[in-house]
Length: 295
Length: 295
Image 1 (tube, rainbow over the protein chains, first blue to last red):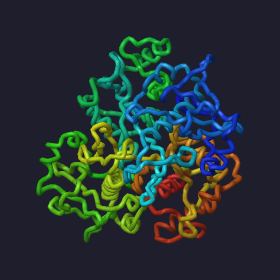
Image 2 (cartoon, rainbow over the protein chains, first blue to last red; image 1 turned 120 degrees about the vertical axis):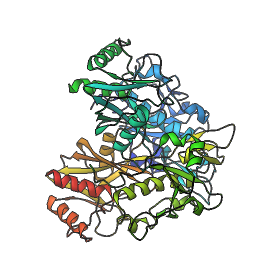
Image 3 (tube, rainbow over the protein chains, first blue to last red; image 1 turned 60 degrees about the vertical axis):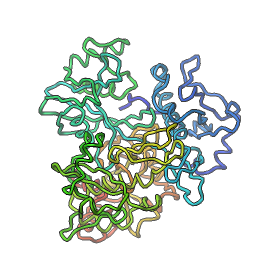
Image 4 (cartoon, chains in turn yellow, cyan; image 1 turned 30 degrees about the vertical axis):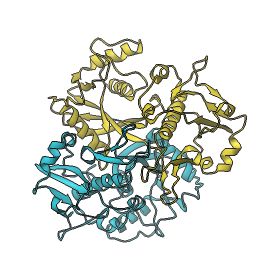
């Protein structure tokens, strides 16, 4: 599972440093690196790599998060000034993501997810008071003495499933997708259910298809803003489809040949003859390749 | 994987009903059931089953969440009046949990996690304004017109891992554990990492042990307050242990015979001769049984 996107950063998260303000202070030298961000979007240098500057480029009074260490060098990112509403969604990142190396994509994804969480959590959900950055940015503390709640970065598990019947794959399109695009069905895991139950519930809700034999395939962070995509495979006995029209425009069964054609076309930057698959940095693309390789 | 705890509720989450206030209203009849809760703890009837009453027992002005349907019967729970701080932790639930049937345990776990989320999210993390219940309790909306952010129940993925070396299992004890108790190492998944990366990072941080060949085993909700436990297996080549003393009191390798003895003892309500394992409703207990069965 080495080719999944947003995984394999070269930066060591160095958990032991986070809890030690003195240790973080010591790393904030001229040697330290500050991730260049345009809002939440990546900035790329002439070589197509993530762009880094030094801490002297941080805005006065800005809050910095500690991303971790590469060797003995501290890596930081600045929490951008933006509205919480603007910190959802993908912004202009989409175009840049395909150009980044796997390690850079992972570093960027982790940093984006973390700083975006700060933008959206400046207040305490328990009491409404302002919160303050803590533990190098891996925590926010409520500023009210009577509440004093600690808050931690949010990671939202999402199941995304390859549902198979008679050698065909169930794919759907959301109303917001560009024309011709199809992907694997997906949905957030809810409180009180297992991954396997979430896969079954979402497939039934969205497409009216009952599944069995759910198995885990791969996981991938998806930092828009804070999902953990959990890719699964499942089998369906009955191919009848009834879509939930509030969620999907369409859902269909695609043959192995159609999926292979879409994947090959996407490698050439083109749409397939029957549908366009998600880009390589989306876990659905990985899952489709996994399914084709499996034979 | 039928014996994992907190899974297999008989209640259909009926997502289509949540978005329709009229449909929820129609279900709020004398026929509807209200889950009895003592704060967040379960209330059990004379038969050892979850206790239910009718909506007329809800406190005046209380907020109700819609748990779902059993047949055509709406099932609800009341958001308890308690401080956010009190909504963390297990309270007195521990003693009751072993007595509940699997389906009741799942229903209770999902309900507890959801109502506890409401207690802890009465304010908007984006702007600090009060929030209001929405979609039958599966959403809270910011009451400020200029913000109007929507918030969704939190589910925190946690990796919990059976690390194996030469047929022995790595188990550790946290300072808060009762004397003699050991369990599988575990930790929250962070933004920007895969499940497999989280397993490797946590095992290295807590015990100084490097792992390879991480594989998924099982998932289980853990509603204290909102974890999704993701059980994995991994192999270690080097058994040297260096514990993080801020996280663990001890970590050791246990033989198959020691683990089997602890599991058999726990079925009799006793401690094993070398350690006491977690109770049956903890995923670590399931994982140890899975490892023993695997041979």
